[in-house]
Length: 383
Image (cartoon, rainbow, N blue to C red; front, side):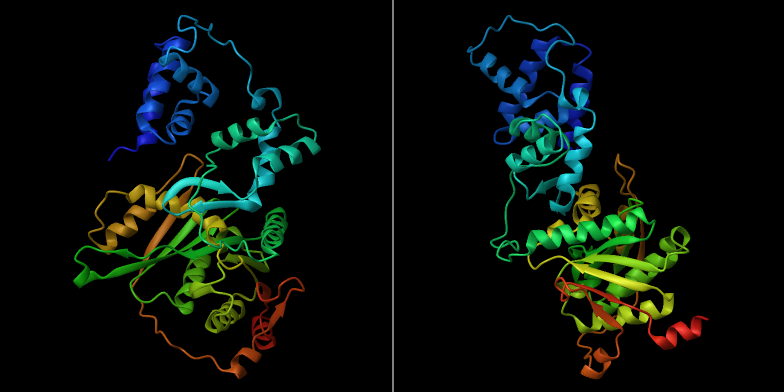
């Protein structure tokens, strides 16, 4: 199945060499009208033609403009990215902590309004309007429309503060050359003859600095033990070669699921991993209902979904192959393996076991932000 966006890009790359400005404008307008709602944005992303120009083309089609007017090549106002080269970088820094992704779509969303972003950019010394911010977000692949959960964490007063706290922590780790990973379980997928093969649970680990991912494709239950085992396998397969001298590991994760902030077994297994690696593990959970802001969602999972869309998942091996074949223009690389281990559900963790964890909570929302250090016995054994 041909990707519509890619097909449009190829179409307009061919047309630009053969059509004048008016012809290209009319073609883009006709495509946008044919596509219906959202067509202008889709064509603008694919063709590189501004939304303003496409709307002008729509007026041309309706006979509302001077249809014989042709702009000479290279004419028109230069883009802000050309006149102010640093503005895109500034914009990316502002929206990064508040970026939301959908694992079913390569588009991203930001929780910040274009008006607020324009004000912040102006305060940073950039001369920009709200409309221009909208256009730049469109060029960066962001959408201003999304289907919103009923309460995507919006009721919690510290939601945005937690986003910023996570972003600051990640930035500190990246600047120090330390590992910062985003983890989550992708939506379970039915495989082949469901009655025989059942479902697979792909648990992903995304290395934020390296833009590389690891997916542990489980055939058993999505448990806390499975989640930590996936992180362990990432470390030995990819992480240790890059971060051999690191003494700390930062994990950003959802607030629920197998790696949830209230899951006792998650903390027990992280303690075991901290002891094994002799490293302090810092965990930062996203507030309830805000899982789509986790980096792995819009940096990795959406591209995996796009890569295997309309392809039959006839076997577990095919799933592993398709995940491993996922790449992006930004250089994303993913390794995937099949985990045939069986993970038991319903494991109980006693209060005594919890008390033996070397867990230290941050002052700011310690239920979401904490670190687990190697216990004394583990440190002595490593000497």
